[in-house]
Image 1 (cartoon, rainbow, N blue to C red):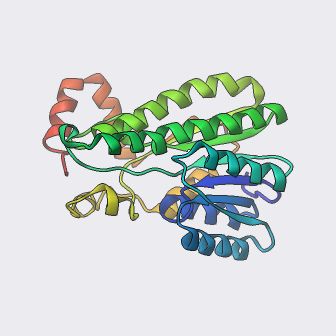
Image 2: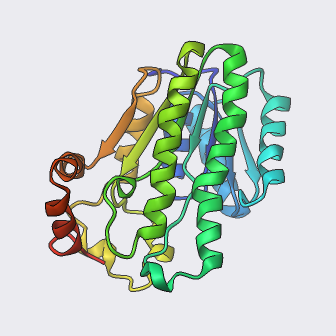
Length: 264
């Protein structure tokens, strides 16, 4: 899928960060994009840039809060009314909040699961139904390396992403016979405004600067892997290797993540 002319993408969390860069990467290859986020003005600017990059493809901005089922269903109404089929869904919406589990507000826990996990599952379900009928398509869910290697002050966030990884692993098997692929992306920290909400201290991103990913390069990598039936992308590679070591020696892994590699 190096060239995506005529393909239709649905991208959530598209007003900033990785979602924004994924929209640009898809549009630059000629794809039609349906962009979803809460912030209307920022989303409209992204859509305008996508039209310029694609030189003629469509870029639709759909504002909505993925906390609500009705907002998700409205997005698919727009897709169904505007395009013949849906080729790629990328769920990039999500947020984190770094605080000890014992201090997390229950309302925040519920909201994080609704946005990071439940909304992604429902969008994946609605997309899978359409892709199964057309016998083609790809669902890309942005999880996190935190879903594999949890660290202090990330209990809830890690749990939302671990659930998503498990969901994808099952959905991938269910859709294999229908020629629909499910790709899970597990990034470490990314240089985006994600940490404006996630890190109350304001210092975490500075501490992990050498490991932090460039959202432009990550978006290009993700889009380049579409159509290759890729199962997972784990970045940075150092964290991917660390996950293997964690599984082999979990007690050592607990010590390292709780001390040496605890940057929160």
